[in-house]
Each structure stands twice: as structure tokens, then as C-alpha cells.
Image (tube, rainbow, N blue to C red; front, top):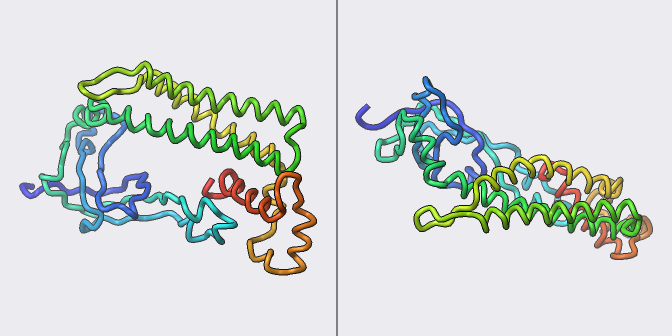
Length: 264
């Protein structure tokens, strides 16, 4: 009507929407002919009448402590489903209305899609390097670093991390100006996306194999250290050539948080 449009239904994935003031509702995937009613883009406040946010379980809320869950307790990015129950959007907040081509252009002609995935590859490159360092420290903690097969796996992980970083550098170096903005090479960027989607889960599995049972054969929580008898047993059973027992337990719990828990 003259006051605006009304939307109903659900959208995902609302990462960190529970902490947002506003939400952009749009279509990233191209729409087909006949889907004009879905071809809209708008922004609305999170307290809009009829908007509901169905959040998944908080990993931070279920974290035992910073000692036991150092990542989940501090870095959880909550995801949520956005449910629209007859939400009225004023026309001044509507960017696209029943125009599939304009919906697509909003992300692809503006280079928004390129920048969105470019920063995702930067984050992934950093995360992969973190996991490679984690793998190295795990083998040091459990005393397996010098085993030839372990050294081979660590070398492969390091090479894969360097490959991802090289792809990132390549998309930056071979990019081009679009107006006054520098846009990374899209062909390299999409190639990196395809390869890293396959690489990351394989890398995580290798780190798990290198850790063996070390990530689960740990004290139940930081509270065990407060019991003098348990503390003595922990000191005997969690010995390491590279770190003290408490430091080893703390580190391996961080490793589990990264690759074995719901957070990881």
C-alpha cells in the first residue's frame, strides 16, 4: 500500500543479529523468473513489530570457564533465524521492490559480493595458520614432534596454509580498479573459495589425528586442580617435556575448543 510493503516468512543466517540494531534483508542468490514477489531488499530495526529472532543455543552460556573453554566463552558469534510475522516496512526503508535484476546488481554490480568473500578468505587464512600452529604445539605437548610421519603431516599443513595465503596475495595483486576502489581478482577469489571449502575440514581432521586421545583424556574442569589429591594425580598423568601439567591441560582444552567442541 502507500505506506510501505509487508513481509512474512523466515530468513537465515542471522549471525550476531541478537546484538544488532538493524538488519538488512536481501537476496544474495539470483532469483528466477516468477519469483518477483521475493525480489526485494530493505533495512529495518531489530525492534520492528512482528520481527522475531530465534537464536541457537549460546556456546558462551554453556562454557564452564575461560580455562576450560577459552574460545567459546569469549568469541561465540551467535546465529539466529529471523522470522517475519506481517512486518510492515516503510517505503523509505525499501531499496529494491519486485526487481530480480536489481536484487542481483545490489551485490554483484556494486562489488559487494567480492568484498564480502574477500574478507572471508582473509579470516580463513588467519584461522588456518592458527590451526597449523595449534597442531605444532599439540605435538610438542604430547611429545610426538620428531616422529617422521608427524613431521611430514606438519609440513603438509604448513604448505597448505602458505598456499591459501598465496591465493589471497594473488587475488590482491591481480585485482583492478572499479572506479576509485580496488577490487580483488574475482576468478582467483572464487577459486580460493572452492578449494578452501574442501581444505578446511581435511585440515581439521589431520589436527585431530595428530592429537589422538590427548584432547579428551583431560581433567573434567579447572575445579579438579583445587583438590589436593586430584592435583597430585594430574601432575603425574599430564606431564610434558615442553610445558607444566596445568599449562598442558589448559592448552589442550583450548585445542579441543577449537576443533572438537560445538564452537569449533
